[in-house]
Image 1 (cartoon, rainbow, N blue to C red):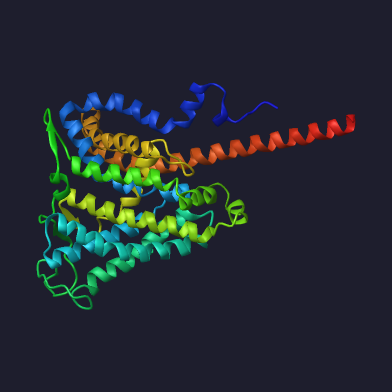
Image 2: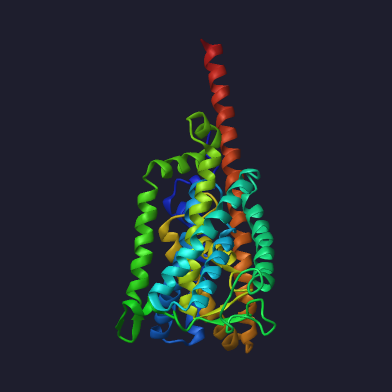
Length: 379
């Protein structure tokens, strides 16, 4: 029987185009948008390098749940909230520079672990619907976070610094200055080449995380996660504790997202206390999907390709929209379209591929049964 699956096409070029349809689409878009924007090469390189350092840790935190078969973890916003709480306490205690960032990570880690455990338990009860469940869980925990920050801090939770509190004496201010740790990691070790600043310290941390992920996939726990991601029933039959393995993948992802949000905010230099974490999951997932990842498979190269294409689009879209149509706002609308539209398109493509593959497998199985029956009849 002829294989009808488009994702298994014999022509390597066709297979490559189908498997990488989303990144190819963005490359074509950028070929037209970059010249229209009029930005210099040095400016674009500076922006992309800055955004790679700022966002890579957050996007990499998505990889392990994908490996464990839990799809794209919108729940990384839980880790982002834990990181922001760590930064608030760091500011209150007056620790600055690299020690301040380390302290924020130490404070945020137990909170991220607890939130990861909660998320893992809930997602284990929603097998097959992890992505939408993690998104709704993020909204729920966000409500608790807002309540804690707005009413708990300064009243139930001691906060000594008046600079952090609202004039009424409790509740954290909407915007907090991170001048004490602003670009502490970026400036720790950086070089400048032809006017392009490269934060080697941040990239060293990201490289260490990439090495960790590469090593982790080859550990016993990493292999268990791969097995669970491929088939939970087979993994359970092999003696793997499926629920525990899935929960651990979410805990690791949440803790990494906590650190990623701290790295992100130290680069920005301010915290929007009530909103900085809102779009973390959406933007990270959109970047990963644009890099060629799917619900079932994501790799480290997908992270860096996706961040480059996604943020380059964000940089050039407003200017290109202004030059092309006289309206910079068109580019701003395009940002929103990209953020949410690419997730919808990628999920639809994934569902289509799965449907085609299942149909192909069904036909092949039917053909094999028919051939076996014919052989038995002939014998």
